[in-house]
Image (tube, rainbow, N blue to C red):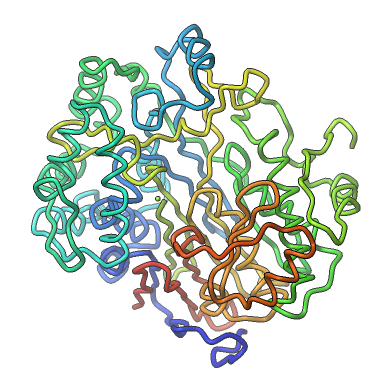
Length: 538
């Protein structure tokens, strides 16, 4: 069990303890929406879905009804997974892609080019059908109330809203911008912290979903509206694309790190990067949280894993790599041997040789779920289906227009995905549960650092989340939170790292943790201070 009164790191918060139910999320109103499900007789899956639905309302700067989602969850003593990420529409033909690749290196994030089929609501349906116990009317009621009656915008969300708005004003086409501003602004401006925000369009859509179920997004009146708007505005999504989509149950990847079992989902997500980083570090000793030599090793391991990820993480239906090859002991040994005392720009190994929201929920019956959903860049593409409050994501940004890449776009293909839920089990399974850190390519970096803080440095979950982080950018460039001492950065600079303080805290991710002590059924929750997050407990 953790030391809940630890003084190893001066955290601004304490862990939250409970027994009957717990929901941890980036926004208090969403966390309490989930907890209402458990209080009314539902389970952790109902709670996660209610929380996820509420988050689309109270944190539209990071997610919405038009995104993707992933989940890891404990059921009957087994860890299972779900991938509900979408693929490039069939009408996005190869000749158009080849034409684009001659002009730029990325699909336009503010256009239909980057909109893959939204998988999120199909993922919600899968979890409810397989494991939920309440009706959609009950699950979506809190989100409908928030959208219809309004809520005070929380401080971090307000800050993000204001920062992101200018990007959409500068980059959206005139037609798309008008609908975006009508849906997500107050007469052209972002709502301020504490200001009451309502979204009647989204409230109406949530009511339709409550009455007709999630399939109406894929083969019903919502699908018709999405396809019609796509056709009117030179998009690529058709009703046939939407009808064909379904989520995939998947077996998670896992490693043993010093006796602790760590679970991540397989590609097309980047959880493999976190697992590979930990395996590279397995043979080193760590005992001082901010020792420059130890931070150097962590950064170098992470960089090597990212180099592999860039080359090998792709849609498994198109790229037949067994991800276990990247976790093979001999392969990991080769990568570890290449780490020196100096910063290096790594290259991928040779395998032939050898703006997201995260939430966690748990109930008294032993159900636990690690859940993540996203519109990718802020509000996503900025394309909003008129009258619905549905903002479509831009996950296709993670395709690359390099024809030699495994992530070269093709119709029916899923892009490299950044959002990753995590799941943890301590030695002998005495402590287990969901964890996650959201934030684009920071996510495996956050997983690595939070897990090491708990396993190697013996911090409790709240301390591990609040401890200062670094964020590798590219090559040898690394950002550090201001809490890092200048002496640490100077010593890392001498090793060849290009160090810089990062003043934008959103760069360093935002996370939540819920662990269950299996001996006495105590739930242990934590939500970090970089977000408006909260642990709701029953």
